[in-house]
Image (cartoon, rainbow, N blue to C red):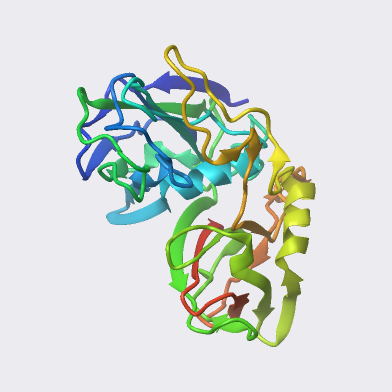
Length: 358
């Protein structure tokens, strides 16, 4: 039986409000199941009255990346921006890992955001180590977070111009300690990686993207964000989509309204679906509610294409644990194609793909 271990690292990332990437060395002694990232400060003040942009604050975290080195080679196993990871967490857990706190006036001085990096197939099973990372086999494991200076595009009007003190980012590890005789050295590897594409065909035609999917392993799911040329996500930006394996349609002419219903059924998430209050009352004033509207979560522009509903239990077989998904072993680029019908030639599509290898 694997023993659970929680620890918050003593080494913090201290962000001074300028554009920069900060690297933290992660422990390499147990099974890495999850990492919690907590950004917190009570000394960040807006320059004036703020009208927050959609996903304001989250957009300041432009990249969250984990790089693993083992057997002489380096590999990125996780790479997602702060906005998409926050929303992916909402889909997975049915509620925010933490409300977003932003300073909206000069009288407020808060900044608080949280994320979870999750190396589990079943996001609701605390004892799922089926794809946990055996870090003790690695020679290096590091977390890289890229921060952008607050601006009118990633924060809102009158963003903070300087931080009075550095913002602290803390990392908490959720790990497993194998007991004697338990061997996780051959665990499959889960990767979570992002890609951004731009449409070049206007509405009325299904446009094909041959390089949309990362093939060669087991694809569990793809988390989509569709936005306009101004980087504002919207449900109206894509009408329908299709996924083809060669000449075989795996998902045929799926309208996004239907996909929203599917997401609601599988993840309890939909546009305007109540998730409790998004308002967080601090000691001085009420702070930002983005991405909420009157206490309801707004998932506009987000869709989960699920090749395996990860809320279902695993199936134990004689050969071990069978992990569901779409096997693309032996596929070449272009064998698995995403097609979308977009509102404009400048629509932006970003996907976060969860893949399992081995």
